[in-house]
Image 1: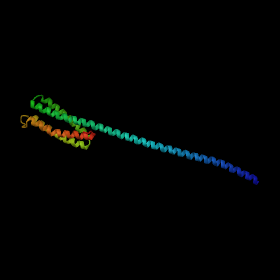
Image 2: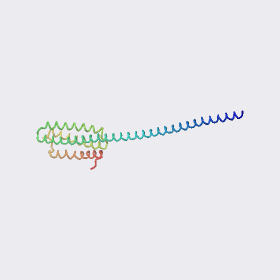
Image 3: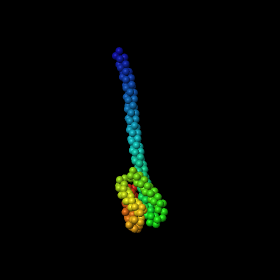
Image 4: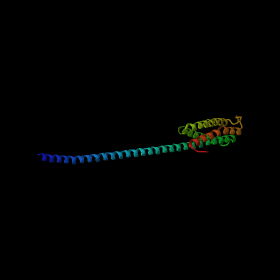
Length: 193
């Protein structure tokens, strides 16, 4: 019996070895597959992270570009309307002096003043503080000049200042502030001299 038991034992060891080898091979294959899947998932996460970084960088660049365009448009409008406002003040001054078409000049002055007011209000929402300080100073000078001009227009024969002196005062009091405003806007937009 011992030979039959020995044969049986050898057969059992052979079957166990065969089954064990298959299980060990399958276990190794599963572990290798899991490692490959984990590596692929990690690579996808890295690629997704990189893609998100690129997307965020692009969105940031786009927001900066849009902000620059909004500031540029606002600066152009503010510069144009402030210069037009001063030009219409001068036109009104000459219309009062020559006593010709004063009503039209006043209407044009008021229209340019309102346009300037609107562009200044827009700039308060868009432009940075450094530019707004210059814009506020220019606005103060423009409003003071407007007040002086309105007094002159109301009673030019009572006003004691000569027209040329009033025009010089108007321009000397306002132009430097408009120039400073233009420089502040150019600096904000990154425009070199």
